[in-house]
Image: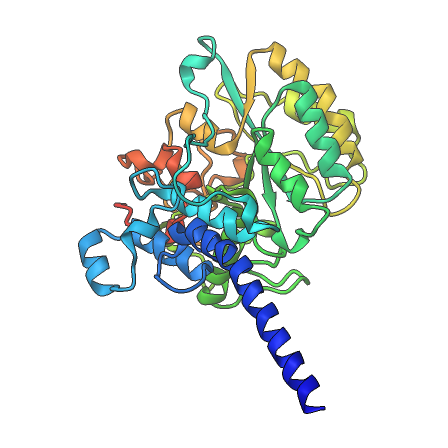
Length: 392
């Protein structure tokens, strides 16, 4: 009995040693492959590495940051091995962490490093005299009307902006949101779950500035996590802009998030409105300067909205209008949204504003001389806009 135990022990020992010899090259290879992701010099890569790398890139003085964070590994922070630390490294690290099989993501030097990004239209791309419309859709996404709208916009060669509520994000809708970006549209902030930022309209409401701030941050962060692009603007659900307590005042500057109103409201949520009614609202109020148009892709039956697109988009295009995103409208018209003036002042959209908003005061510029406001890096830069050192 003792002899059998000794024999079994020796056999197990030999087998274990053999496994170690076999596995050691594999383990060594894996360690080498992921060296470039160990930003914090820890034994494994996680979201803390991405966070530290992002904060390093946002630091006004990189040497001071390294002094204050001795566990920051400058060599490993060059995740793609391109020879410099940049936001491309953050994106690669995020891709690695999000991958179902991290082994499929190459960390470290590779033969090709192609910069990804999205080219935004310039005024020179259009014929002289082109007028611009920013078509917007609130309250989505969903798997029915949003998809139909995207299909129609693609067929009609028109861009739009979707003001979304991330509460609706799930395995079925996230690919739809990602398609918005892929198709050249923008995804902007409409609050987490359509909770009112002001008077209680039966859907709950934010009553403190901190609650409102956290909602805006959570919404923007989730949109970025899904699309890789930060929202540029916020539109308040129900157009409740902070209520009597003014809880939204100053948050546009603090979060680097423009507040944008409705522009031309088609009232497409009204059951009595037909597709032709919606089309006529836009066609009969065409502004030579262009503007913003409000529609919806969720919150009830939106088939009339879907059906109206083919009735007005081609006609507007024939009149010299180009359909762009809200951000592109401001950029192409060389205008900036104004600083939010408080709950009694609806945020000016500069173009196509209904007369009932006539209580606005004199326009005030929003970062008028900040060149970063329009650069591509702003939207795909991993550092949250509210953490950036922006000179207002």
